[in-house]
Length: 130
Image (tube, rainbow, N blue to C red; front, side, top):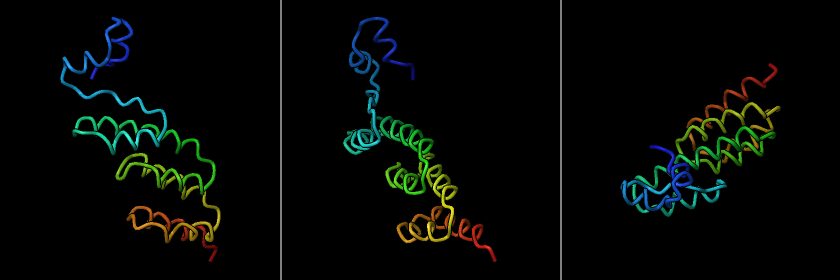
């Protein structure tokens, strides 16, 4: 899809007019993960929900990059869209930031997510000195 915001700025025609004429979903302008989550949860159709999901994933990926502690990365994992690139990246970042087995175990019981469980078990194995 072409950038309707740029087209709107160029032509001084509101994005909504293009959206209606082209029968396409309105862009998700969420600035935070929380806003994107709300947009996703309140979307009325599949296309709008998809656009909001993409924005939520994009914003979550930024938060993954910014995470500097295992707790921070775990929060990003918990707030990321389910089955997304951001969720997988947050799990990997979380494991890489865990420096001790106790740190991994702190979060291990908080998930039923297959990838998170297996990532935690691998990290515990890597950290085990024996």
